[in-house]
Amino acid sequence: MLHRPLPLALLVFLVAEALFVIRLAVPHQMVFDETHYVPAARTLLALSGPANTEHPLLGKWLIGLGIRLVGDTPFGWRIASTIAGSATVAATFFTAWQVTGRRRPALVAAMLTLLGFTVYVQARIAMLDGFMLAFLMLAIAAVAATLRRGGWWRWTLAAALLGAAVACKWLAAPYVAFAAAAFVLLKQQDQRRFPGLRAAPALTILGSVSLLTYFATFVPAFFYASEPLTIARLLPFQHEMFARQTQVLPAHTYQSRWWTWPLLIRPIWYLYEPADGAQRGILFIGNPAIMWGGLLAVAACWWAWVKFGAARPFAAAMLWTGSLAIWALIPKSLGFYYYYYPSSVFIVLAIVAALDHWRDRTRHWDVALLAVSAALALYFYPILAALPLPNPAAFRTWTWFATWV
Image (cartoon, rainbow, N blue to C red):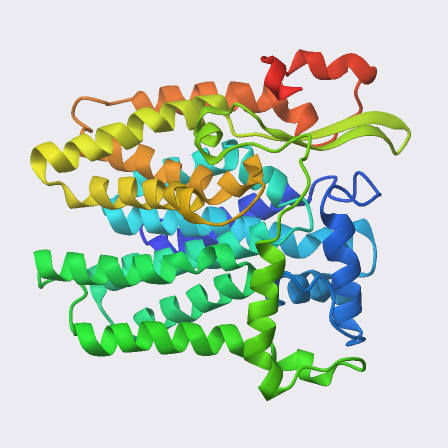
């Protein structure tokens, strides 16, 4: 069983889920953007009317599903996010297995994703980004499987998952184009890739299925008690969402520019205040060993492509680079470090791709990186998991630079 990717991916999912649910209800108050999305989920769950209309509906429906199944409690608000986080870790494992064809890089990818901080924090808060990335990583895993084994159903599944990702947050929309470009480029380079699939029908399925999936998530909005959506209003509503997302917003304490995110210049505190009888903090930041080391891996992947024409390192480097380049083009007036969330997972794929490409020279480097990453995870754990802190000035223990405060 452990020599096949799917059963082992399920085991990875269960291990991640077990880690994410520990003390999930702490703090018992809404944290950061939960103040927007939990009330919106309650409103949508009751079909009362539109809420939080600058974003699509699926992520809020999923938060609401957790509330419906578990209860309107902090655990209920966040339980769906833990499942999304666990799916992200499992999908990263599966993708790494498909790309490298080996179990060890896949396990390293899963462990680095768990130790990277960002998935852990995002899996324990009711925000939309976790759901978007879960669908996106599952779609990438499906594309990777189709690349190796073909199958129209796998490609159709990938298209549907991409549509679901966009239905959580529009940030996922460019990845539909990325998937199309990857199919055309990789198929042209080697006709044995995506066996049994032809370009024209594949691109048609990608576009139509992703679009239909996206719009299907709006069906419950047609049954609102107040201001129900109509067919005539469906497309104008998309324009209204765009207008809200591109409006000019006032300056924010934790705002940052996209080019600073890979360097960890300005992380963001989701919480730093007394809660549940103690001073607590939640810092959204990437594991420095993985985030900074990953930049070297991305450079190595680009070099492997330039020097040797290596397709796998190129794909990993392109995914990370494209995910960051999006933010140079998106018309957002403010940026925040948590927008780097997808890139913080894609950089893990670059690490395992680089180590696998040069595995004869980098033997045991993965173990060393895991050891350093695990040590940093233990060090930062109190401000990742909202543990009780000794006093209000305790943040100085973890804020290495003035910009981290």
